[in-house]
Image (cartoon, rainbow, N blue to C red; front, side):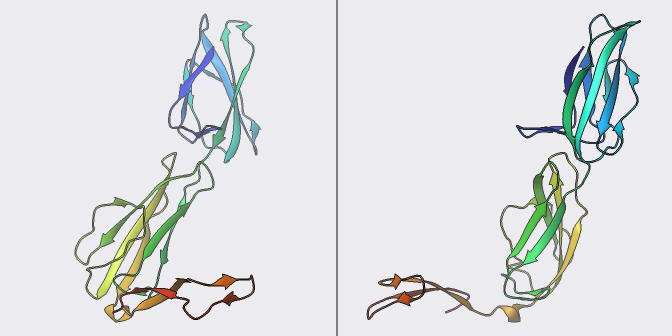
Length: 220
């Protein structure tokens, strides 16, 4: 017999990740069937189970699992084969970070909104979000960069976000209520370096003619 691939899996170049519902397929020659068993870290080895060509993984602990199998024909059996996989049944998480200016969930129309996700297993595939504009939801968009609610009038709006890992596990939908308040639309500035200077590790030295540079947002 030989292992013949699997469904609902992801190969990261070092390990093959599987989940509950992944199907392992086998081919056999001159055999009436196969026996297989699965090992996980808490239960150890399961019982040998007879199949003809494939089986679907049940729930296991996250982490390494081992699968052993062999073909049989009556009392004749082959040597046992062994394959190892990484099992992941934990969904990712998603979070929203509010930039400045903001006061809690009260934001200016141009306040940056950033999404991030984490996953303890196979890894995050994508983050998506949509916005309630007061009367309807936008379509789901794949997140790539911070966004804002520019163009939205003062009022309460909602941002829903969700992450998905590389095995198609999805996080719960995070619903964030945000209040747009244009009165927070205050100017902002930041120091952006200088010329004709020297930093000795403790102090920055300047002279007549040194130029100090600044950046500003929403400022005249």
